[in-house]
Length: 334
Image 1 (cartoon, rainbow, N blue to C red):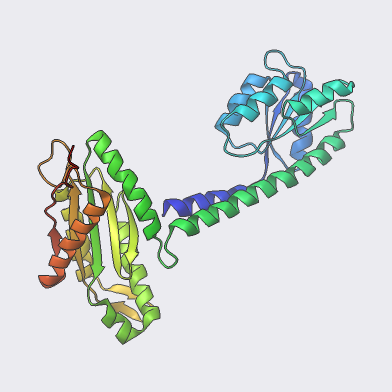
Image 2 (image 1 turned 60 degrees about the horizontal axis):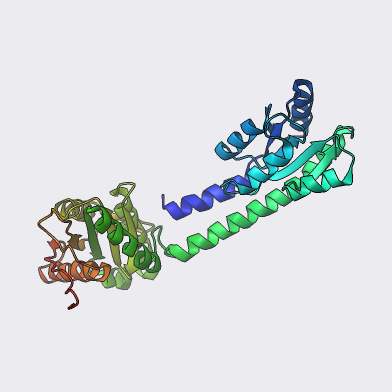
């Protein structure tokens, strides 16, 4: 699955899941009563006996809300609130403090520490349920907003037709891949693939079926990639595959395998299987100890070299894989 789409799916799931509540209460009987009350109200509840345990659990698991006693040994409720607000937690935690204090200054101190609400321990248990219900509305709104933001992020980096990244993502991310490969002296290869005579597919079957051919070919590409590999639509019927930790020989072998599978297995569409072939160009970034590629190659040079190899593949009769011979970028004179 496209990593960006995984992010969107996770965000949507957060909105749909039952809200999980963590209770921090050092008194065993009170802790059990709180747990049962909130479970009857429909929450998924976990309870711990002190603030340190609560902070650890919040860092480990996705709890939407925290109900904490104010007076606890060690990390008390106010300190726990401050720690939660400073912690690296990727979602908002709605905090309700339970207190037996009646002074307004104490309640203000709790809110200043980061609590969203408070409930006096002498109150009817239904008051806590009602206040958590109000908090749940805020939490669901925050999670819905995060899900919407995730959908926008997906749209910004993925192709509108295919389950692949778009050219914008390619341009941004390839810079990072090249920098990482140079920094760690690792291999990096690029493959450009082009569906042969794609215009004829559109002319014979129409553009809608042509889109289905593109989608089927994109799925074929994805099926051959490792977790660390990724692919993007370069434009039209051209695709770029980025292969970290892969030398030119490995990239050639992958391209040849995809080429052979495409040639032997017609692509499935709604009007039946359509036979197509594809041509490939391969280029690699040379590491310090490698004898192929270009140690000083820029992302632009890698793409140009792979594209030139693709051109040779087409000139050689198509349905072929060609490998680029790279030269380093010229170094500026000192």
